[in-house]
Image (cartoon, rainbow, N blue to C red; front, top):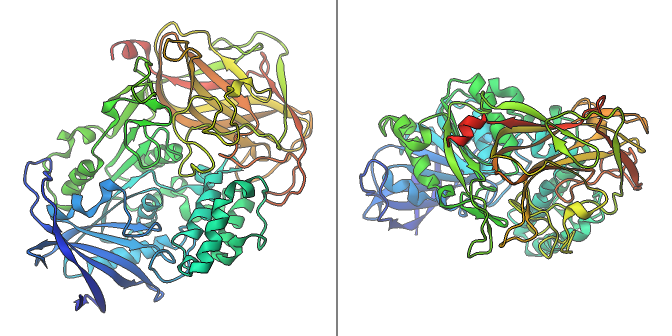
Length: 636
């Protein structure tokens, strides 16, 4: 039925869904949940420019009627459809305990009016939504936010406008800092964004409300691999043109590789001083594609605002806090109840309750991290490698006591803390952009129709369409491998990872990639061992000196290159090897460099480059590893 009610300054028609009692949920303080959930759907909330955004409101109720009074509110702003939500953000976890949950379709998405733009409207729209909520008769004026990925980004973006009634945020794997690594990574383009736009133009866009247009966009999405093999994407020449704002945004991003004002809307790290000073609970995963952005944003906020600012990092991929992904099991301790954690956080900051938050395990210290790698490596019943791990609580990240240690690349493929003694040593390889090194797992996300994500053995097979042969990547001639001897004792590495290469190329522009791998020895369960990816990174040569200016190379001249890898939190066990793979492509995680020096997304040629890595006394290429003191690791 429809009921006409007054909500603050506007009058709207609300669809009232039958209330549902949610039993059997008990918060940490032991009290029973007591409220039913009453949903009022498709409230059209006006923004400052008159555009109305579709919003669902979930109210505490008894006997099918909303409870009188004011309650704290938990808000999610999503481009994925406000009815859909990940399990731990479901209203049933909050409304029965005295919260109102509000979920809103972002501009131009789902049932909302307006035209979608990649996050650039979500600062002011977030502000307007929060302040509209604060004026409603059911709101007590305290508003928190929750959600993952884009829905995590809308929290930070709202906080950058400092809404008076925004009280706390709990962003998980937030999709922010797009010019620093989330989309543009060392000058290369993360093709999962390309994939995201292909998918979401077909689902949830205003154009997809028309069945015929949706069918055309869905067909294009199904054919994505063919389009990937025919990049660059040119404006107006694919079906994406019928979703013009999606095509415009994608091509603008593909063309714009400099970290400048174009990406300003999402830049939290370099503009943390604009962020509202409020309690922040950040949630991330070591295998999440935003692992660097999450940890770096936490660090920037911790240095800038009073907060408090807390961080939890698990062994997880994007928005999945389970025990396994890819081909690896991290053990039962990796599973957490994220809804209970958020509720404890909200109880403290939205209800001024919950006792001493620091008595709650996840919040005893500012950082809680899962250190991977303490398992015995057996094959589980599900056929996965048991990598294991354990939780540790820390006052800071990166760990102040971790010792940055250079592991040097040596002639013949060695890797060790001792510098190379040779006066001249190098390794050259051919990089053919028509045959790029395939992506097999790692910190990717949400693009499983084109690549795997998470913890994978670095071997090809049916799981990888770009390398469907059962061969290790290390067998390729365009992958240069550097490996330690078997480790004499457990080696714990926690923190950001960097590689410094001295390199040259026969081309005026090319890419250099680096990958960190935990190499398992042969075992009865895994006779060929297991090459477990821990993280990787890339640098486009023209951006070697600055992420804001391009500078092509002189062929044959040697330059230093700095490659930021995904952060690592892992025990490389005794008998394992630490390995670094160097190459010039990682497709389709990153777009392929044609080696021609032509402008981004505006090339028509590809050439093979001969790239050379130098590893001698004068040009000591190395990986920088933050080693936890051995005595501490042994005492674990």
